[in-house]
Length: 211
Ligand SMILES: [Zn+2]
Image (cartoon, rainbow, N blue to C red; front, side, top):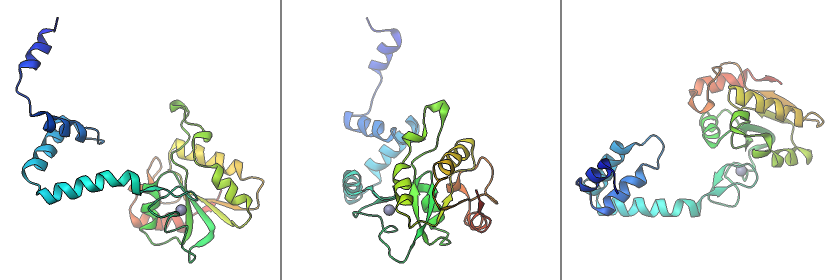
């Protein structure tokens, strides 16, 4: 027996099924609630041209297929290796360690760094059960083991998690002949690198210290 609320809901006017599905799909996006999803769906239906919708759906369909993770650094790319790893003009002896791809892009946009990156894909967070084993760190150590790396710049966020992660990595690198530095000055404590403005990142680079 349906409850009174369920009965009322079942009698309410709803959108056609396909539009309801589109609303539900938009709701999968972060920060998009029912009302915004409804607005997006109605906009798609009434304001986008057939070509716009077709292009959009083609891009959506291909993105998971065409983009993969660079096996060397964890960046995203369409070719076998990312454009940074495969660029011989970059300094492959300097590796900048970031938590996520957004941080890599933020630093890359400053044009202040000509080394390569390593995306560890998160940070240690004991309350969420995320340990060093869940991060992309083994391949970083492998790279250092090969002996061509001179400097590892730890650019994890200035948060408890980012700091803990930086300490762990430093510990793992203790026995290798590699300089370990940390981006620090200028970046706000508790801050996310990807939100820092360009000048702040530039200053953080200049002020990086031995860790
Ligand atoms: Zn790469």
